[in-house]
Image (tube, rainbow over all chains, first blue to last red; front, side):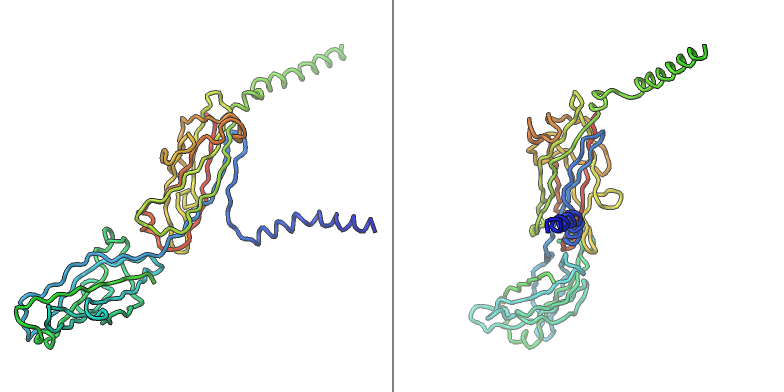
Length: 190
Length: 169
């Protein structure tokens, strides 16, 4: 009995280092710091780990102004903007909202009836048309060519923002009255 | 006579190796004076970086011992990137980092190290090879992630290894 126990522990002692080695290998290959030894040269090492969060940035926006427009001619303002995303594939989604009731895309002028405008987005710069944005609804699956957050390097612009007013709304505006509103664009990593 | 010659030859054959050994092999004290050690190294974990507009750095104290009487040493570093470059890798992207060395502990910055390039003329305050007595640390190793590098990298989890080699001088 005693010799049997002895044999068990002897076998355990013989196999334990191997088992521990296998367990260590199974736990992963993460490197841990190693210390140097005293010698003519001494070498140590450390592991470095960092996680970069997904981030986006929109920049290069300018105000949109329609001045002395002909109410019989639809108006369009297209501007090139910079949208940067650091996600794999540089994907993003964009949501727009206006300053009208519940985020409606409207321009207001005091007590006068607000008028509507439409917003389109194109993930390429230099475009006059794009996908129509609905107030508060994300347009997903957009891809940016920008490689720097404000397009300071790489492509100078990466998308087109198009604001349109049709003749119906233009004709509903009172001549000489100043209309204004704010369009807010929110981009998010995808 | 033959016996005498045999004894004389034996004496010479013992003397020459002894002289040779004395000429080319330094004594223990001389050999140990060339020794150096780097220790007390700890991994650098930046966690999730959400502010990509600011530099991120971690400075850690390490122990460098030199047996030289000066006690001088040099240091060089290499990363796990191509050619020893200081880069971390993730799937489909790399993240460059900067390495700085200060020959005093408790420093937030130091002299920039370049991959595989020796920074010499350093002096350590360590009096024991593992800093077990005397100063508990003798140098600072700083790893810095520049904002420009963070913005150039894709989102994801990055890892790499930094190797430090010290030699007495």
